[in-house]
Length: 228
Image (cartoon, rainbow, N blue to C red; front, side):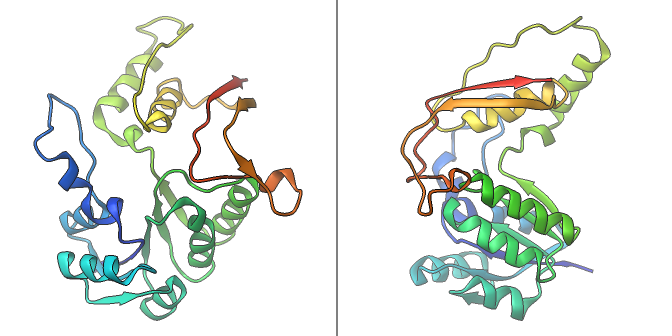
């Protein structure tokens, strides 16, 4: 039995990220790879369809990866193809709608690129839809799945390092989310009790602060997270 896979969003992370990093392998560094390439390496999965609103990207994707059917509307893909698994590789502002629709219409597992969504309200809606329909979610920050970090967490939890009082680290470019998730994982996923930050441009269309949305992925300039 093979799991039926649908790809929603046929751009860089779905299809072409390997083209950017070929020849950059250094030591034990694991470089990114696209969703389509990953599914091809897994015998238990088959890509049955892809979706993108840009016809040129959709056509390029289906031709490159030999995907039999393409759609311009993710609802049609989900309704007609009945995928077991979805990859959500659209722009962040399209994540929530596609994820919720998939969860409520038979999809049982999804991998969503980071950031997961664009507002607290969207995050709450995604959580509710996935919990109500027993859908498994994996998303962007994936270092916690690498053997080297699992071993590091085991060492930290064993007490060999004593009581961990502080951790220093650095991440360049746009991979701060990976660094933060890795840090939390190595420390045992402590529960945050408060979060504050200085943000870039935000806007809301209805005056509700829960619906504040990032404008064009403007980065967080600084943040303070307090843990229990």
